Length: 252
Image 1: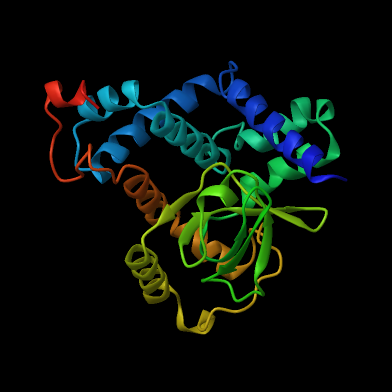
Image 2 (image 1 turned 135 degrees about the vertical axis):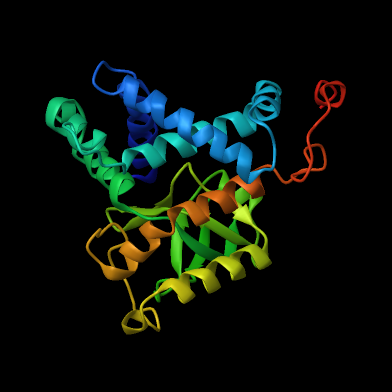
């Protein structure tokens, strides 16, 4: 199957889940989840919720990034009461409407943890060659159109890597991070990892939720989300250590 068709399936399933979180069974939970996440994002940026809200109104790119991050984070949430997980619920109720590839991609979004990657090579408009700095694997070719135009060898990236038909992709919830940020995250994950799992072993199936290293990465999800949020907002016009005066905000 062509990369174009796989990307089309990925876009369609993302749009489908944007709509599905607003259905009767999930709207309340999703809105509550957003109400929890947005104050956390503001705290990560040392901003008030009001300042962050006003900034997002004027900055579509960051607004879209946070929306995508919240949605993908929500896909792997499990609740105590039925329905437990939105992906499982969707596949049970409406999965027949989606292609086999779309269903497989959705399951990958549910199960694949974020990890930290170093970019080894980039072919603009085509692909990235990346190295997973947590899971000991051979370098991975990612079929990536937009990211390959803006990312460069030697840079670091937090993303989920999914695979369909032996072709690897990164998800919408991805962000470049500074080298020292990547290094600090790796050190924290290693410090928190039981000795029996060090050094990190090779992981073939990134979406296998039962693999110990994948479980460790899931446990450090908030660490990587915080790094992505801070990196996405690390611009001269929004200093992370101070509030933005209203008059300056309107000039952004």
